[in-house]
Image (cartoon, rainbow, N blue to C red; front, top):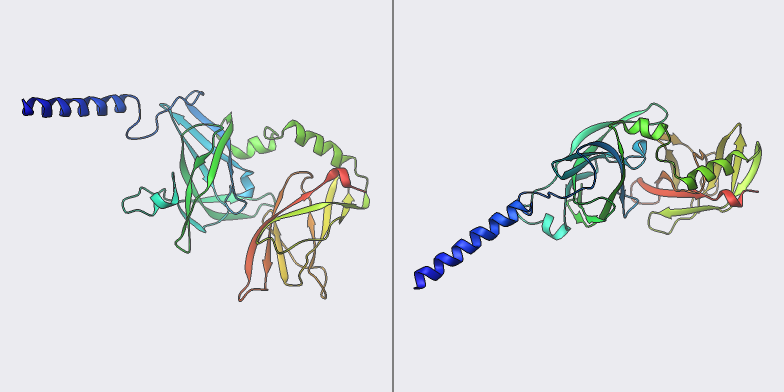
Length: 285
């Protein structure tokens, strides 16, 4: 009698495993992605300005959909993230955790400069929904993050999508129209700084120089210890020698964050810090 009960329990366990396998709940994430199998250019966004797609690709990655499974390949901003893990940091640090290994990608910035960065193939459980993705930095510590994949566009050429304007929303179109109305000359505009430790600030409003549809901002920091800035892969040096650090940098667009890197010498050794600057077109005077 006891033997019969044991056999029944074993049979039920085997049957349950088989049903889970058929449902796609074991051995991977088989889902109904809602789009056909194929290759897409999709948007990959994160919850932190220090962890994002390389600026050359403007938050875009290559999404592959095959047999109900989705994977997006993203090129990051450097080689400082050495592993990713689809889940929580506490699980990534456990023995036997299956980590995502990097590839070496070459990115090309708008000025033609190329650089080698790390890229990753990230499993995507669902579109338009946040999911956990932990990262491991060069210092050996895991960090939790939330990411989201959205707006898939058929194709496999990120730059073609960017240049074709497929990623420009209705709000962005209004921004372009507003900036095009700025006449040549010197103006001011409110600027918002985000990122870093929160201790630094920039003078707002900032001077905006307009010439032939191109715009340059005069950025004055609250510290004299910034020795260069990087915008779209190009380095800019201070335009002054005394007082707080002042730079003249390009303004590629208004009303959405422009990612910049500023190097500070205020620490024990020079340190690059990533920030975003947002220029308010409605405040231009």
